[in-house]
Image: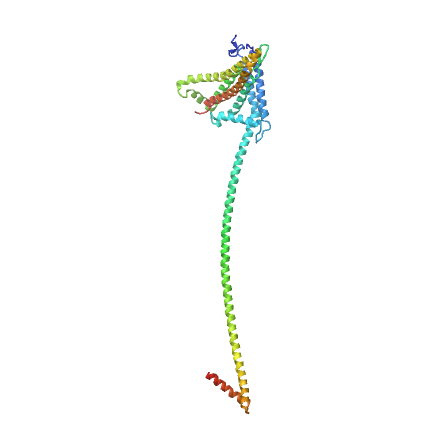
Length: 236
Length: 173
């Protein structure tokens, strides 16, 4: 289990080849799914177009449950992309993990805390940016003293707490899933008995991980919109 | 057994700044590309469909109103036609009554005229018949008298005599 990360150094900063590769693969897969299913669009939708429209309506529903569509409509693209990107990322590490020469190459990009925290920070930064844009700097600042002025420090802490929970929840779920899958795989390869014993928990855990992958991507988008609504919408 | 892999960013040394940049880059790239190639067209077609549905509904509503209007118009026309027909029938009936009256009047007048002329003719015929009978009676009487008397009396004398007698008889009657 003690896998190393294939790291590189460039311009004085370190990076992880595996993360880079998996991000590229995720991006490619999401792009291909979306583009292929939206070729030859028709007014009467068929096949994959239906599926894509369902996703759009799904994200639309998430946004609408948090703010009215007039302000929320501009986050539609962000929401759909986020949902598909995170879902594909979560699923990607499930079928196998590739370890080459003690380096872990194939895994879910979201099983890397750097990736999830980057996404979380990006989201919180975006919410703050749109908060300033929607209400002006004064309105944005005064929002921190909103329920009661003395709670302003808590509100500041809340921003950081939100960032942490948003990123680490996703990371924890996916990483734990992969660790357990790794353990089950280790059991399966240990002996013939182990293989037989590992079939059922392995299948169950993969099924459950797919479910978790979907739920986590949904939660991520949901929370994104909740935070966004806190900053952008006038009140609740 | 080492539990190092349970630590955040296990196996990594320090902060992977390039990973952060890579994540941001790939996510932003994906969002931009998808907006251009997938979500944009999809949203466009969904809006188009929305508009199509809206316009179809509007068109249906319009044609419904239109047909309602036509129906009302037709109903109105029908009602008008019915009243007109009734009026025509009424008129015809009245006309018929009038002409019947007229025909009957003329017929009655004609009948009266015919009857009158017939009566007049009968009267004339009667008078003529009476005169003829009278004449016949006179000549028969003369014949009879001359036969009875066998007397030489001139026709003129006899006639005058007999006529006087008959006139006397007529008066006596």
